[in-house]
Length: 315
Image (cartoon, rainbow, N blue to C red; front, side, top):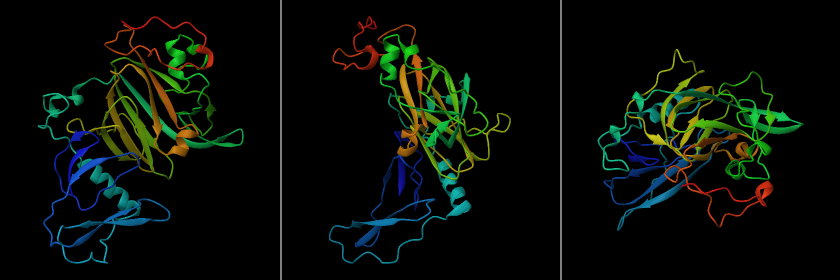
Protein backbone atom coordinates (compact mmCIF):
# COMPACT_ATOMS: atom_id res chain seq x y z
CA UNK A 1 0.00 0.00 0.00
CA UNK A 2 1.36 3.41 -0.99
CA UNK A 3 0.27 6.11 1.47
CA UNK A 4 -0.52 9.34 -0.39
CA UNK A 5 -2.52 11.32 2.20
CA UNK A 6 -2.90 11.45 5.98
CA UNK A 7 -5.82 13.51 7.36
CA UNK A 8 -5.70 15.99 4.49
CA UNK A 9 -1.91 16.27 4.14
CA UNK A 10 -0.09 15.08 1.02
CA UNK A 11 2.64 12.73 2.23
CA UNK A 12 5.92 11.35 0.94
CA UNK A 13 4.70 8.24 -0.89
CA UNK A 14 6.18 5.39 1.13
CA UNK A 15 5.09 1.78 0.62
CA UNK A 16 3.78 -0.33 3.54
CA UNK A 17 2.65 -3.93 3.95
CA UNK A 18 0.71 -3.07 7.11
CA UNK A 19 -0.68 0.16 8.60
CA UNK A 20 -1.61 1.13 12.15
CA UNK A 21 -4.81 3.18 12.32
CA UNK A 22 -5.96 4.47 15.71
CA UNK A 23 -9.47 5.62 16.63
CA UNK A 24 -10.62 8.53 14.44
CA UNK A 25 -7.61 8.54 12.14
CA UNK A 26 -7.82 8.26 8.36
CA UNK A 27 -5.46 8.04 5.39
CA UNK A 28 -5.56 7.35 1.66
CA UNK A 29 -3.58 4.56 0.01
CA UNK A 30 -2.96 3.33 -3.52
CA UNK A 31 -2.83 -0.41 -4.14
CA UNK A 32 -0.97 -1.59 -7.24
CA UNK A 33 -2.75 -4.50 -8.95
CA UNK A 34 0.37 -6.32 -10.17
CA UNK A 35 -0.21 -9.79 -8.72
CA UNK A 36 -1.49 -12.97 -10.35
CA UNK A 37 -5.19 -12.37 -11.23
CA UNK A 38 -7.21 -14.11 -8.50
CA UNK A 39 -8.78 -13.31 -5.11
CA UNK A 40 -6.78 -11.83 -2.21
CA UNK A 41 -7.61 -11.11 1.41
CA UNK A 42 -7.41 -7.65 2.96
CA UNK A 43 -6.88 -8.33 6.68
CA UNK A 44 -7.95 -6.03 9.52
CA UNK A 45 -7.02 -6.86 13.11
CA UNK A 46 -7.07 -5.13 16.47
CA UNK A 47 -3.90 -3.74 18.03
CA UNK A 48 -2.80 -3.62 21.68
CA UNK A 49 -6.03 -5.32 22.78
CA UNK A 50 -6.45 -7.89 25.54
CA UNK A 51 -8.54 -10.09 23.23
CA UNK A 52 -7.33 -9.74 19.60
CA UNK A 53 -9.97 -9.61 16.91
CA UNK A 54 -9.58 -9.88 13.16
CA UNK A 55 -11.66 -9.99 9.99
CA UNK A 56 -11.04 -10.09 6.25
CA UNK A 57 -12.39 -8.56 3.06
CA UNK A 58 -11.87 -9.96 -0.43
CA UNK A 59 -10.07 -7.99 -3.14
CA UNK A 60 -11.01 -9.56 -6.46
CA UNK A 61 -9.37 -9.15 -9.85
CA UNK A 62 -11.78 -8.82 -12.77
CA UNK A 63 -11.71 -12.11 -14.69
CA UNK A 64 -9.41 -13.53 -12.00
CA UNK A 65 -9.20 -17.26 -11.45
CA UNK A 66 -8.59 -18.72 -8.01
CA UNK A 67 -9.63 -18.36 -4.39
CA UNK A 68 -7.73 -16.33 -1.82
CA UNK A 69 -5.03 -18.15 0.11
CA UNK A 70 -6.18 -19.49 3.47
CA UNK A 71 -2.79 -18.63 4.94
CA UNK A 72 -3.02 -15.07 6.25
CA UNK A 73 0.07 -12.86 6.59
CA UNK A 74 1.46 -12.49 10.11
CA UNK A 75 0.27 -9.42 12.05
CA UNK A 76 2.67 -6.70 13.22
CA UNK A 77 4.54 -7.47 16.45
CA UNK A 78 2.87 -7.05 19.84
CA UNK A 79 4.01 -5.87 23.26
CA UNK A 80 6.91 -3.47 23.55
CA UNK A 81 8.18 -4.46 20.09
CA UNK A 82 4.75 -3.65 18.68
CA UNK A 83 4.75 -0.22 20.32
CA UNK A 84 8.20 0.54 18.88
CA UNK A 85 7.00 -0.69 15.46
CA UNK A 86 3.91 1.53 15.60
CA UNK A 87 5.86 4.62 16.67
CA UNK A 88 8.46 4.04 13.95
CA UNK A 89 5.70 3.88 11.34
CA UNK A 90 4.06 7.05 12.68
CA UNK A 91 7.36 8.90 12.36
CA UNK A 92 7.65 7.79 8.74
CA UNK A 93 4.55 9.77 7.69
CA UNK A 94 6.15 12.94 6.35
CA UNK A 95 4.81 15.98 4.55
CA UNK A 96 5.53 16.10 0.83
CA UNK A 97 7.18 19.52 0.96
CA UNK A 98 6.73 20.15 -2.78
CA UNK A 99 3.05 19.14 -3.07
CA UNK A 100 0.42 21.88 -3.20
CA UNK A 101 -1.68 22.52 -0.11
CA UNK A 102 -5.15 24.12 0.02
CA UNK A 103 -3.66 27.22 -1.61
CA UNK A 104 -1.49 27.35 -4.76
CA UNK A 105 1.76 27.01 -2.83
CA UNK A 106 3.76 24.01 -1.63
CA UNK A 107 3.04 22.58 1.81
CA UNK A 108 6.68 23.11 2.72
CA UNK A 109 6.36 26.88 2.35
CA UNK A 110 4.70 26.97 5.80
CA UNK A 111 7.66 26.97 8.20
CA UNK A 112 5.91 25.94 11.42
CA UNK A 113 9.24 25.06 13.04
CA UNK A 114 10.39 28.69 12.90
CA UNK A 115 7.40 30.17 14.75
CA UNK A 116 7.97 31.17 18.37
CA UNK A 117 5.93 29.11 20.84
CA UNK A 118 3.90 31.47 23.03
CA UNK A 119 2.34 28.88 25.33
CA UNK A 120 2.90 25.25 26.33
CA UNK A 121 -0.01 23.22 27.72
CA UNK A 122 0.83 19.86 29.26
CA UNK A 123 -2.12 17.47 29.52
CA UNK A 124 -2.26 14.29 31.61
CA UNK A 125 -5.34 12.05 31.36
CA UNK A 126 -6.55 10.29 34.51
CA UNK A 127 -9.07 7.66 35.56
CA UNK A 128 -10.54 8.18 39.02
CA UNK A 129 -13.82 8.50 40.90
CA UNK A 130 -15.88 11.40 42.21
CA UNK A 131 -18.78 10.90 44.62
CA UNK A 132 -18.42 7.16 44.14
CA UNK A 133 -18.78 7.31 40.35
CA UNK A 134 -16.24 6.67 37.60
CA UNK A 135 -14.81 9.85 36.06
CA UNK A 136 -12.09 10.57 33.52
CA UNK A 137 -10.27 13.87 33.71
CA UNK A 138 -7.50 16.08 32.39
CA UNK A 139 -5.16 17.92 34.75
CA UNK A 140 -7.52 17.44 37.67
CA UNK A 141 -10.76 18.55 35.98
CA UNK A 142 -13.51 16.26 34.68
CA UNK A 143 -15.79 18.09 32.24
CA UNK A 144 -19.56 18.08 32.60
CA UNK A 145 -22.00 19.61 30.10
CA UNK A 146 -24.19 22.55 31.12
CA UNK A 147 -27.86 23.36 30.52
CA UNK A 148 -26.81 26.47 28.61
CA UNK A 149 -24.33 25.64 25.82
CA UNK A 150 -20.94 27.17 26.61
CA UNK A 151 -20.61 29.18 23.40
CA UNK A 152 -24.12 30.61 23.76
CA UNK A 153 -23.33 31.75 27.29
CA UNK A 154 -20.11 33.41 26.10
CA UNK A 155 -21.77 35.03 23.07
CA UNK A 156 -24.51 36.52 25.26
CA UNK A 157 -22.02 37.78 27.83
CA UNK A 158 -23.22 35.58 30.72
CA UNK A 159 -20.35 33.09 30.81
CA UNK A 160 -19.69 33.86 34.48
CA UNK A 161 -23.15 32.48 35.36
CA UNK A 162 -22.49 29.17 33.59
CA UNK A 163 -18.80 28.28 33.98
CA UNK A 164 -15.45 29.49 35.25
CA UNK A 165 -12.55 29.98 32.85
CA UNK A 166 -9.21 28.25 33.45
CA UNK A 167 -10.14 25.79 36.18
CA UNK A 168 -7.74 23.49 34.38
CA UNK A 169 -4.14 24.69 34.57
CA UNK A 170 -1.41 24.36 31.94
CA UNK A 171 0.42 21.87 34.18
CA UNK A 172 -1.13 18.71 35.71
CA UNK A 173 -1.69 18.47 39.43
CA UNK A 174 -0.41 15.64 41.62
CA UNK A 175 -2.69 12.69 42.27
CA UNK A 176 -5.91 11.50 40.63
CA UNK A 177 -8.43 13.71 42.45
CA UNK A 178 -10.70 15.52 39.98
CA UNK A 179 -13.10 18.44 40.13
CA UNK A 180 -16.29 17.79 38.16
CA UNK A 181 -17.15 21.05 36.40
CA UNK A 182 -17.41 22.65 32.95
CA UNK A 183 -13.85 22.75 31.63
CA UNK A 184 -13.06 25.85 29.55
CA UNK A 185 -9.65 27.46 29.10
CA UNK A 186 -8.87 30.78 27.48
CA UNK A 187 -6.76 30.76 24.35
CA UNK A 188 -5.24 33.94 22.91
CA UNK A 189 -6.26 34.62 19.30
CA UNK A 190 -3.43 33.85 16.83
CA UNK A 191 -1.03 32.55 19.47
CA UNK A 192 1.15 29.60 18.47
CA UNK A 193 0.84 26.90 21.13
CA UNK A 194 2.48 23.61 21.95
CA UNK A 195 0.28 20.90 23.50
CA UNK A 196 1.90 17.99 25.31
CA UNK A 197 -0.05 14.75 25.85
CA UNK A 198 1.29 12.52 28.61
CA UNK A 199 -0.28 9.11 29.04
CA UNK A 200 0.48 7.51 32.43
CA UNK A 201 -2.18 4.84 32.00
CA UNK A 202 -1.89 1.35 30.51
CA UNK A 203 -4.25 2.04 27.61
CA UNK A 204 -3.80 3.68 24.22
CA UNK A 205 -5.21 7.22 24.08
CA UNK A 206 -6.50 8.98 20.97
CA UNK A 207 -7.33 12.70 20.92
CA UNK A 208 -9.31 14.94 18.57
CA UNK A 209 -9.21 18.74 18.28
CA UNK A 210 -12.14 20.58 16.68
CA UNK A 211 -11.58 23.73 14.64
CA UNK A 212 -7.89 23.26 13.95
CA UNK A 213 -5.31 20.99 12.44
CA UNK A 214 -2.00 20.59 14.22
CA UNK A 215 1.53 19.40 13.55
CA UNK A 216 2.36 16.17 15.39
CA UNK A 217 6.01 16.92 16.15
CA UNK A 218 7.03 14.26 18.72
CA UNK A 219 6.22 10.94 20.31
CA UNK A 220 8.66 9.53 22.85
CA UNK A 221 8.70 7.09 25.78
CA UNK A 222 8.56 8.50 29.29
CA UNK A 223 7.57 11.97 30.39
CA UNK A 224 8.06 15.38 28.85
CA UNK A 225 10.62 17.93 29.92
CA UNK A 226 11.52 21.10 28.01
CA UNK A 227 15.22 20.35 28.38
CA UNK A 228 15.02 16.92 26.74
CA UNK A 229 12.30 17.27 24.12
CA UNK A 230 13.31 16.47 20.54
CA UNK A 231 10.86 18.00 18.11
CA UNK A 232 10.58 17.33 14.39
CA UNK A 233 10.40 20.90 13.12
CA UNK A 234 10.25 20.16 9.38
CA UNK A 235 7.93 17.90 7.42
CA UNK A 236 5.37 16.74 10.01
CA UNK A 237 1.88 16.16 8.67
CA UNK A 238 -1.08 18.33 9.67
CA UNK A 239 -3.68 16.28 11.57
CA UNK A 240 -6.80 16.56 13.73
CA UNK A 241 -6.11 13.38 15.72
CA UNK A 242 -3.20 12.34 17.89
CA UNK A 243 -2.64 9.00 19.60
CA UNK A 244 -0.86 8.44 22.89
CA UNK A 245 0.84 5.13 23.65
CA UNK A 246 0.89 3.89 27.24
CA UNK A 247 3.69 5.49 29.31
CA UNK A 248 4.63 7.78 26.39
CA UNK A 249 4.32 11.47 25.59
CA UNK A 250 3.39 13.23 22.37
CA UNK A 251 3.70 16.86 21.30
CA UNK A 252 1.69 18.86 18.76
CA UNK A 253 1.79 22.49 17.63
CA UNK A 254 -1.00 24.69 16.29
CA UNK A 255 -1.92 28.32 15.68
CA UNK A 256 -5.09 29.53 17.41
CA UNK A 257 -6.21 31.52 14.36
CA UNK A 258 -9.82 30.31 14.27
CA UNK A 259 -12.01 32.30 16.65
CA UNK A 260 -14.69 30.34 18.49
CA UNK A 261 -15.09 27.75 21.23
CA UNK A 262 -13.38 24.50 20.28
CA UNK A 263 -13.42 21.05 21.85
CA UNK A 264 -10.36 18.89 22.55
CA UNK A 265 -11.50 15.43 23.62
CA UNK A 266 -10.68 11.77 23.91
CA UNK A 267 -11.89 9.79 20.90
CA UNK A 268 -12.81 6.97 23.29
CA UNK A 269 -16.49 7.85 23.68
CA UNK A 270 -16.81 6.53 27.23
CA UNK A 271 -13.88 8.67 28.35
CA UNK A 272 -15.14 11.82 26.61
CA UNK A 273 -18.68 11.34 28.02
CA UNK A 274 -17.31 10.91 31.53
CA UNK A 275 -15.16 14.02 31.45
CA UNK A 276 -11.97 13.58 29.40
CA UNK A 277 -12.44 16.70 27.32
CA UNK A 278 -12.26 20.48 27.54
CA UNK A 279 -13.02 23.57 25.48
CA UNK A 280 -10.66 26.28 24.26
CA UNK A 281 -12.25 29.71 24.03
CA UNK A 282 -10.54 31.78 21.33
CA UNK A 283 -11.98 35.31 21.15
CA UNK A 284 -11.22 37.96 18.56
CA UNK A 285 -11.55 41.32 20.29
CA UNK A 286 -12.28 42.93 16.90
CA UNK A 287 -15.71 41.21 16.78
CA UNK A 288 -15.20 41.07 13.04
CA UNK A 289 -16.88 38.84 10.48
CA UNK A 290 -13.37 38.33 9.14
CA UNK A 291 -12.66 36.23 12.24
CA UNK A 292 -16.00 34.72 13.29
CA UNK A 293 -19.61 34.59 12.10
CA UNK A 294 -22.45 36.10 14.10
CA UNK A 295 -25.01 33.82 15.69
CA UNK A 296 -27.45 32.68 12.94
CA UNK A 297 -30.92 34.23 13.05
CA UNK A 298 -32.43 30.74 13.13
CA UNK A 299 -30.37 29.60 16.13
CA UNK A 300 -32.44 27.78 18.76
CA UNK A 301 -31.90 29.25 22.25
CA UNK A 302 -32.08 27.49 25.59
CA UNK A 303 -31.00 27.79 29.19
CA UNK A 304 -30.48 31.21 30.73
CA UNK A 305 -30.09 33.00 27.36
CA UNK A 306 -33.51 31.97 26.04
CA UNK A 307 -35.21 35.25 27.02
CA UNK A 308 -32.22 37.59 26.68
CA UNK A 309 -32.01 40.21 23.90
CA UNK A 310 -29.70 39.19 21.09
CA UNK A 311 -26.24 40.85 21.16
CA UNK A 312 -25.18 43.15 18.34
CA UNK A 313 -23.89 41.13 15.37
CA UNK A 314 -20.25 41.12 14.33
CA UNK A 315 -19.36 43.56 11.59
